[in-house]
Image (cartoon, rainbow over all chains, first blue to last red; front, side, top):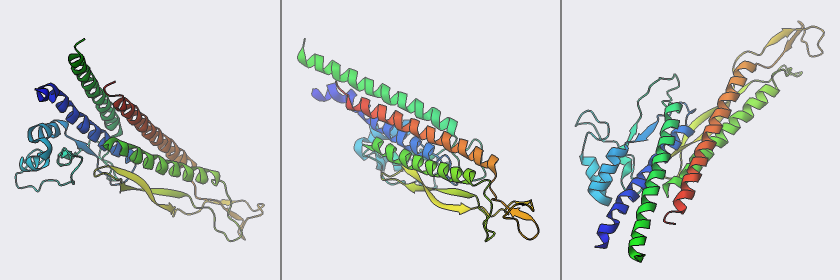
Length: 146
Length: 134
């Protein structure tokens, strides 16, 4: 019974962890905006969220089998193994961003895009936070019955 | 909590950019320096950035791997009345290009600001996370 009440909360908590993950990846990109040879990375939130919700905590193994999610164009490509991140297995969804304006030093960070992504991600993080707060308030008022 | 490593990442970038700003300052300060009796003028210096892994898996910070001296020829100015002039009347100056250094300075300060902003946003989000459920 109680599991039904908190299941929505569970979904948002997973989203929150992934948003934090993406925030960190974008922060790394911005930090390395001037480093020669650095390749920008990003988290595919949709795929990461799918992996987190379908497979639960053992999502990393299931997403490794589902080829084509890691930006692979051929089923025989070797999947990217970036180690395991957090508990939700988001690492397998870390991809490399496409270069819009190639630079001579091999750095693929587009600072404007990264900044936009960073703001976008922080707004969505806060939205998820508000969902959790609202839901927990609803549950509390239901428990107290006042 | 994975967001805490943002402070490490952005902190490393801030420290690297401030070192770059430091090097720019010393280049600009020595832009008009004249070579001493040994004939060795000031050579402009440039920092070399390098990606360095930071704690948790995918986060990567920056560090200054080395400070390189420029190999451009030192600037020679004909000024026989100068006390440091050589036998042919030339005075050796540094090889600093002030325009390049000013551009470098603006770029470094913009990157610094970006990283400060990232840290501030991360701090705001973490503070809001702390207030969850209240």
